[in-house]
Amino acid sequence: MADGFELRHNTVVKFDDLGTREAIARSVLENGPSTAVVLGERLGITPAGIRRHLDLLVEDGILEAREPHQALSRGRGRPSKVFVMTDSGREQFEHSYDDLAVAALKFMAAQSGDHLVKAFAQTRADDMERKASATVAKRSHKVQALASFLSEQGYAASSEIKSGGEQLCQHHCPIAHVAAEFPQLCEAETEAFSKILGTHVQRLATIAHGDGVCTTYVPSMNKVAQARKTTIAGKA
Image 1 (cartoon, rainbow, N blue to C red):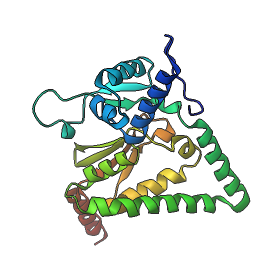
Image 2 (tube, rainbow, N blue to C red; image 1 turned 60 degrees about the horizontal axis):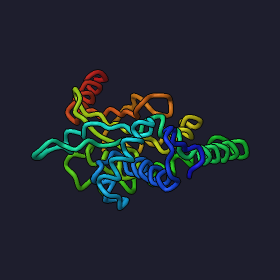
Image 3 (cartoon, rainbow, N blue to C red; image 1 turned 90 degrees about the vertical axis):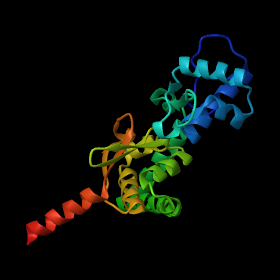
């Protein structure tokens, strides 16, 4: 079991049950919001078994059951709820790895200067841009496509229409504890989003800074074009 991960349920459970619940929680952490059916199929657990474990994980505060995103719930019948990682559950995972990453970056900064940390953040962002651009370019709805890509990377992302644009939300951040120490990672990631989407974006909130969700506002192309015209007119 990963360092720091602890199931708090008070009832006596078998060791195999603990291992199964960690596997379920980690699956949600790495793959984003998932239904009971998807989790059962992914892990080879019966419907009755997966629901029993999910109920206990929700009771322990590790997972939370939510209504599915509107874009994913079309079709007949009542949509199945999705299970997402809570802030408390997220904090149970990988603290030892986070501590190691923070120590390594601090060492890099002390030995060679902050520019090396910035270069590392940029390299990571460039890799994200390279992987996401090919996928996003094929889709007409680019923000939604980016959200899908990020979810595949474990960020549990979603998109929604907002006044004058769209909002990209990342409900989980695998590097939140490291980014809290080194904001260069968030800054480089935001710049990568801008390049991937081909427009200016604005970071409104980040998990690394204590917010519940990483939120990025993406203005509509019409709004961007209007802003450019206003700027040009002002300079004339």
